[in-house]
Image 1 (cartoon, rainbow, N blue to C red):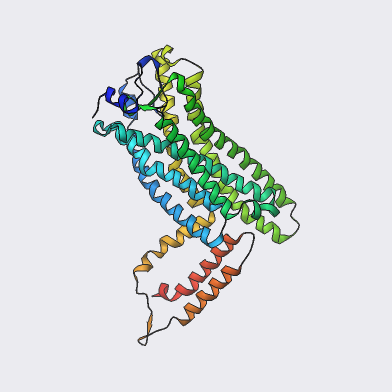
Image 2: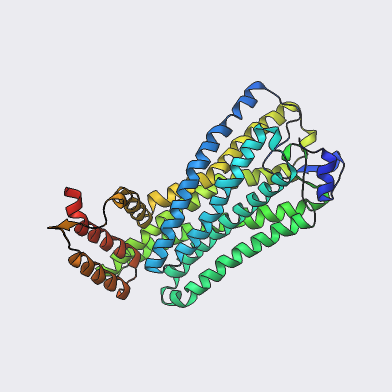
Length: 391
């Protein structure tokens, strides 16, 4: 440790007695169980560190695709995907790698680095959960009240909702840090006194459990609702449009189901551990079993922001197509910009074709414009790039 425990306590202004301290973060103090097998199990951190680096790249690509699709289609769901993915990116690029490295290297256990890591960890979890709720709410309004959707969920209102999500998340985290509700204890653990435990309960319930649970309920309802509307479709065109929209619902449902599976178990376990039994009163054998269970659920929680970008980029067709076109176009960008024929440049047909395609896309207003635009752009790319592919 670079600083003593007293210096850490003085920095946050919250020096307390050990018997009043409760563990309030994603780590559990091992009082009795020090098995070598248990310590070997912690080597999973190395694998998760590598996975976090890879997930960071995927999160950046998802944000790039979301911005591109939002500019093309104007669908507000992409704004909530951006907000959710930025929260996941904060976890994979900074929080989780720091947590894994701090556990292994004592020289990294500086109080300020630990404080920033825990602050961003709470912030990323809160923003990701609330953005997922808004993503489900956006689709609920669309399918339940389609005629009022454009008025209810406009681009401006979606921007305001995203800003509100970040504001209340940053505001709450800043409140508990500025007013010394939490502080950094031994081994970089986040701690609080027993009389302020309700702040942690508020965070877990308001920013983690309720958003994810409500999102799961809404996703299930949307899936059932769209199935009923597809079976009662009036015309073939309407049924086809609902089929296209169902593709986005499959992605939303998959993301919500995975988030519920990976995030809720550890949070519920933590609530039970804090309120239903006294940890220090348990015998060592029970504590060891609880430690094993806690770490399994904790690593499952770490996997959440790692798997999320894979679900978005592989399951949701517009992102899959956009990402595929982007990755396959990278080698072509190193080729000459002009195609020569008899020492002259002939781009007239390509330029006119692109202008017509751009004008057609700008004037097009359909229920599922993003999928139609993507398919149309793909066909354009095939026609323009045919000569270069043959060379």
